[in-house]
Image 1 (tube, rainbow, N blue to C red):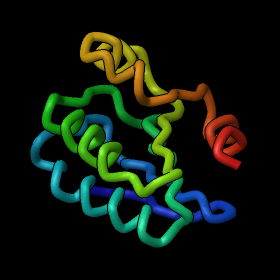
Image 2 (cartoon, rainbow, N blue to C red):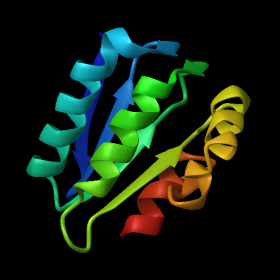
Image 3 (cartoon, helix red, strand yellow):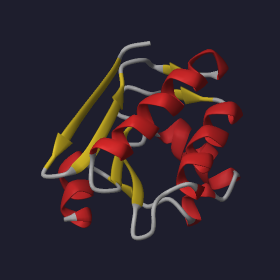
Image 4 (cartoon, rainbow, N blue to C red):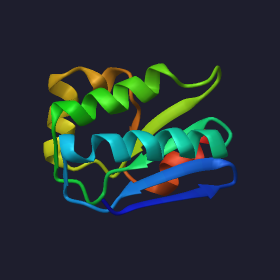
Length: 111
């Protein structure tokens, strides 16, 4: 799976380069998110701009990483499409994961 991971002033940004995130990418996504957290300051932006479909296994990965955040760590989402936003609402993950319209807004919120 194509995954861009970079730092922006200590905040880690992970950008999956696929339209469909499913069980076959779960291990790679989890490793990328955990590595990004270790390299940054404990704050993480998951940019879902390219993602149009996400399954429950991936939701579990994201929720698991959220639970394992360091003290004062943050995980936020940005550029979430309608299908993924609906899934987040259905599972009530939208109540614990902040979501921003743009990557810039997400980075500003964590700065």
